[in-house]
Every structure is written in C-alpha cells, then in structure tokens.
Image (cartoon, rainbow, N blue to C red; front, side, top):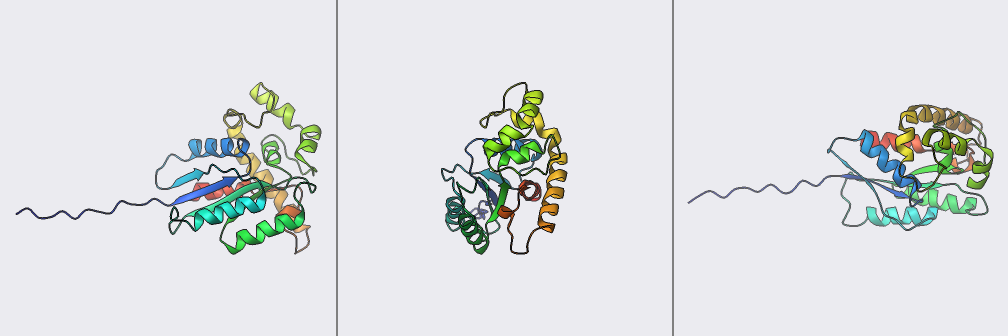
Length: 212
C-alpha cells in the first residue's frame, strides 16, 4: 500500500498595503515605483482600490482591512493623503486621523500641502510653503518642469509621469529629508507633520516598500 504524502499547506505571503487618497496620482506613482524597483517575489506590495478620500476614512479603511481575515501577522498598512487647505480639513480632523492610526498600528505618509510638493522636489530644492494645491500649481515651477520633461501639461491622471521623473527620485528623497528635518527642528514639540509646511513622508513610504 503506497504511503500517504504529506501535503504542505500553501504558503501565505505577507503584504504591505497602501490606501491612497488620490484615485490616480499617488497610485500611478507608487505602482510605477514598485514595477521599476521591486523585481522580487518575496513580498507583495498592494495599492488598494479605495473610494475613501478623507484622512479619517482612509485610516478607518486600513484598520478594517487589518482586522479582517484578509490580513495575516506581518502585514503592514499605510495610508497616504494630503494635508490640503485648512478650509478643507481642519487640524482636529487630522489629529483624529493621526491618533486613530497610531493606536491601531497604521503608518501615515502625509504630504503638506499636497502630493504635488513631493513631485516638485524631483525637479528643484524648495522649502516654500503653499496654502493649497491650487496655490502650488499657480506659484511653483511644477507645471513648467513637467512640461519640459514630459512634453505635455501636468495631469493628475498621467500614467507616464513616473517614467519621466524616476531618475530624480533620490534627489527628491534627499531634499525631502532635509526639508522635513528643518521643519521639525523649528517646530514646537506638540506639532505633528500636518502642522509643518512644507513636509512630506514619501521617503518613509518608499523606504518601507524597499525593505518589505
């Protein structure tokens, strides 16, 4: 009588999941980064399809996923969103999202004032504060720089922008780290990243993707 084979249980791969506020800009950029810099299959990075677009809603979506049967031990969860204008999201809203994320083991990648500031750092070293995306669009060199490198106007839904600027990621990282350090150094000890303008956590998120 033949011996029974011991079947190995299928190996479950841990995941790093990112919940983005933007439907196009951040997901296109992050998917481009993963495609270009992650060619191994030891871990899975997943940019989640998410219809939530406020800081608190995004954090709650990440918590729900973390507590579901889709998640296993070792999974990592990030939410990526913008500070936005004060008229759109007040400080108490950001503080609520921040505290809820921290108490549930969710990582935050915040850009102040918006993700486009991170894109701007791919081209220039800028510590200028902007009050909104519209203000940055009007008063920074982002549009001209994108037009120069891509040959087309800046479009939040552009699927080709990452390919055009990917060689500038390391300079953008270096600039962001320097700007963040200067902002934190001059801030009150009670200040959070959403109080510091400009600021971006994108280097932290990319580092997390690199090492996961």
